[in-house]
Length: 615
Image 1 (cartoon, rainbow, N blue to C red):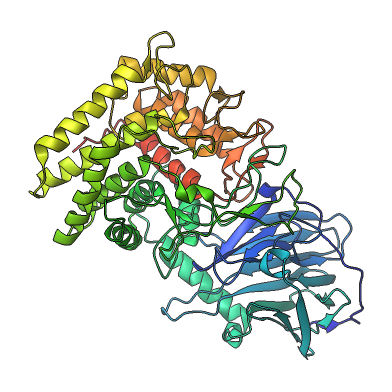
Image 2 (image 1 turned 180 degrees about the vertical axis):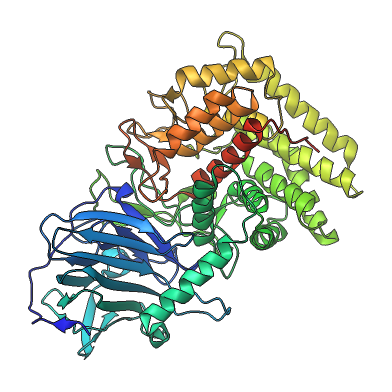
């Protein structure tokens, strides 16, 4: 047992503003939490990933709330890592006299029984004697709700907010309450001694996590059993597996959907602007997710996601149109509002909900159909009812593909005719036709072929700029757009086509800073928003893949390898990267890791001289 020291009321200790990249993520396919290298759990929504925050210090160190465990050591050397092939995070504090570690995870069971929805934090003294401090300071409902705190026992505290579920903190050491309504503790550990803290809903069976070491062993076993199902054996196995583990972490165990990121409000510009909410599922991520999961051998997860997508297609509007994004349970995301109590470090407070939910983004239909096609090719055949829903949606695309929209980048200053949207409408028609032919399904072939060919001509005639020798974002413009990197990836154009090669050169010349690829021509007010964002991480991996497909394998490999250096210390990527290497935007982002997996597969093929035929 750990030797107790007297617990005293302390002045509230607010953690320093920690960079985004100085965090690892844990989760249980219901929610997630971000843990910094200083031992502070700085971000967590509860009980679901899109629920209000209980900890938001990553956004606002003063008001957001945090849960910190740290040693009383002057300037310790700190290392953070994942236990191999798991989402169990270990933060190690080292000094000449003592070494300790904090192990963070959310419990899972291999038996299939639901584990409590909680965070477990195990503290271990590895070497020497170490004094530790703990402060659990939740701030409920995006720091908008006050709470009371009750001393349930010497080793348990209950936080009782006004409107949401109470939280219970249980420990193996004594805890007390200070004047800020926080739970605090100070305790000593001798070598090989441990202490454990469990935080979860008051209605959760938290006793099932005791003893904590047994819960840890079962959680490690769950993740390693899942990791062994991967069929990928390529040269980038470690980074691909970390990406796969993240995708699993961001998936909903109940519904099968994958959220774009577990956070909201993290700024996309160094000035602090563009603070969107990404805790939802975008239809456009569907094709990437299904492709990645199938390539890695995770047919069960691909099937779950396809069921989720099929249900959205089944419930689409009467004209066949789909929403851009959904909550993990398939409902519409909430309206976009300002989380005014979380002022953050930027020029504006973060936003919750997402106004892009009401935009028209025609590219989502191509993502949908590519996912349907891939799953039919590598998974299971589409049902009769499923095909009827698909047919209705393709008819919608055929009727609306020429309309302006807000596109993949979700412009907030008006709709416009966009190349990427036209491209993905072509994908929607192309995959529907291929699927109908392969499965002998009824379809208006003549009409669909005509529309598909018209889109093809439109792109080559109206989105090609002869002066720049490049495809451009909108007709008649000189604006380059990195989303055109999808053209060879979706097999619209040959990867060595002359027009494509000159476009690839233009992107490398005008949108590239070393391995970083910016989304579109920089400067001006193209998107109607203030501030200049960083390189878009997914675009860099698309660029590496496009280079490899074009036969410029060494260039593609170098871009890919340089991008690996832009991940954080545990292999995670934010949405964007500043030129100075700082992480920007919501973190970690699923789309980036999906693009990494796709690029790694292509580089493996290219380096081994293998080329997959298109069928």
